[in-house]
Image (cartoon, rainbow, N blue to C red; front, top):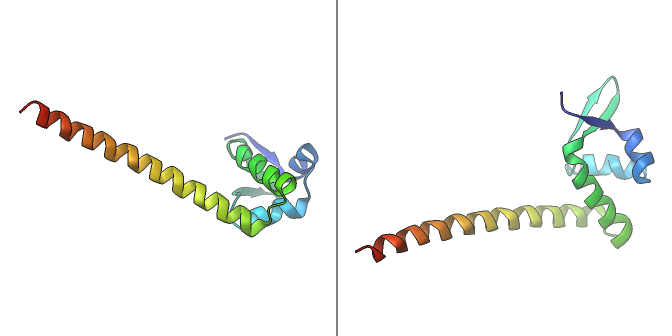
Length: 100
């Protein structure tokens, strides 16, 4: 089983409100596991929680804003990946024409 941490521990460690954590889950920004009525976040998702907490508490960005920013950054990453793929294909085609 992957490593995980309970919601209650996260609230104490990151000094965030439990309602903020629950709203992140409600907005689909965090995925949790529930076992014996205890909510757990996987360790691999901690960077997202930290990012959202920083944006919310330091920059005062509300939950809809967090959702928009998160989705736009995911789309930007997908576009960057697609751009790299296309550039690699273009490079391969260009190399073929140089050999002619």
